[in-house]
Image (cartoon, rainbow, N blue to C red; front, side, top):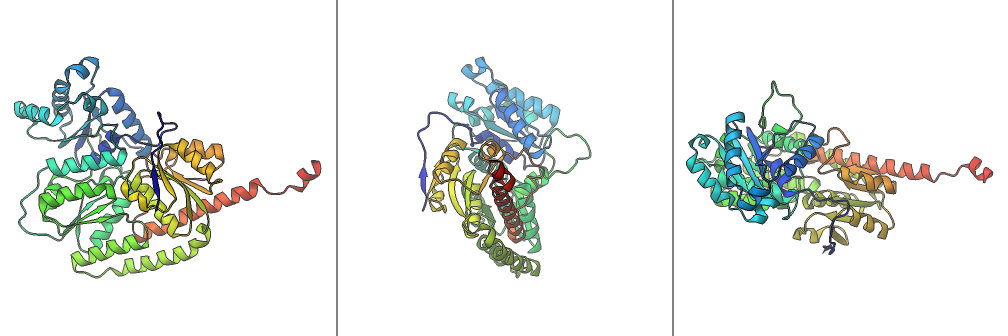
Length: 449
């Protein structure tokens, strides 16, 4: 049992939290032909674009209603209307994700009510699906915004008639899964003879492919036609506790049963995934995955010597923290410091003495209290802390801007878990070598002393 602690700090020092609007915009990137629109100031959009471009190294379509001092006081309905009309005329998107920010939410704008008025008096907007999502910066973090955006997609995008069930399964991936993870889940479902309907699908939009020409909206991802077919699926699989809410909304709307998996990294979680797909498809687990399971068990046996007794510090969104923390704990590592962005109740079962809702400054203090650590797992913003302390840093989460391929790295499934174990074991080995080299006895230096 872990104690969840929220220190009463008046400010954030070396922030860990990523804003909810950015999380919402990231979710809308997984819809085909979409253009996310921030209802707020221009600076909010600029920071989000920079963060996503640095992480994915791709062009990111993101627009703003450009609120100023006057519209912040008098109301931004006219700004929303003008932005929707301009975007529709110039970019011709299939979907516009309208995301609120702290600026408009603090004022108390009725964004959904304004949107109904705008759509009612502008016939030219009839051909585009506008999805409003309330994602103020002061409520939660990246996971919160992602969850709210996916829930808004399910509520506002039309569902087709529930005529009959098809050989398909809905998958709602959490924000902690990379496009590489989503691609792996897609392949696993297909190997069971099922068609996966993934919402949102970053593996189709931000997987690093080169388009044939310039396009001003998202390219790839889940199409509106596939969203309409989700009501005919045999099962909805949600990955991550923050996806439980959207999964329940989909269940109430379509009647499709729901399975929430806390993670898809690790032997037991992937076993649960395989059993669920085997049951819903009526097919046995393919031989290739039986082989991969055996390879994972062998990797766990080999890797236990690298992990046993090693001290790990973790920082990240709640579901990312849970997934990585459970894996290193199962491998024999010991989590001595853990910091997250929101007080998620399920973290009470986290394998550590306490989980602090805070920033990298809190993580630094925890590491000091623990007497140091062997490996730090966090996003690239932890590089200053790692450099100052001389710690090995394994980059995970968002953003990762100082390494290539972070978006394509997969830790899902048997194969992904195996590769992640090997990578973490290598990082621990490098950390150990660094410590040995740093403290190696030098006879010449001793003689000179």
